[in-house]
Amino acid sequence: MTSSAKSPIRVLIADDHAIVREGLKQILADNKDIMVAGEARNGAEAVKLAREGDCDVVLMDISMPDRSGIEVLKQIKKEIPQLCVLMLSMHREDLYAIRSLKAGAAGYLNKQSAPNELVNAIRMVASGMKYISPELAQVLARQIGEDQDAPLHEALSDREYQTLTMIASGKSVSDIAEELSLSVKTVSEYRARLLAKMKLKNSAELTHYAIKHRLVE
Image (cartoon, rainbow, N blue to C red; front, top):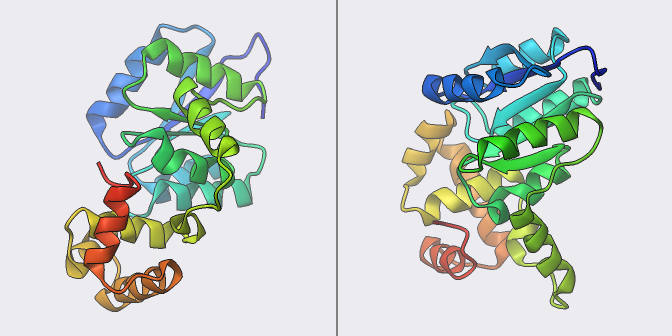
């Protein structure tokens, strides 16, 4: 859905941190062609508000409390394919940006980006274009230039990849289960699947792989 010159771009902010939402609202308030149409504190609220059709662009935090931002993105794109979703994250571009774009995001922006970059990204995706930061452009250029096969972690599902990064960060299966609101059995199944896909024997090898490929910060 695009916005005409006379109508402001209506933005839905989806982030579980109130202070982040307020900061984004202050940045956008200085631009007459952009207005905040709603706020969502979790994935469920984001989907509900998106369904109501009162926004042109969704600013979606990739780390939501009830489910991952990428999962929410996929649901929104399945139900409202014309809606633009711009992913926000504290993570480096090479960790989640490409996954986000493949899942249907119109762009990916690091939360440490300058305010004017955020505004430009919103305007760009609202006009029907994709937004790619200079940092992400470099990541994509490197990947295109590499002759080697794609790394094993790129074959993982989003939930398996999330489990990998959390294990590599030192979290136990029970910690991950609690944080993601999943059963220990389910997380254990994700762990077993990702180890099999990546041909690794245990969490120690997994952690070594994640550090080597800079998947954890």
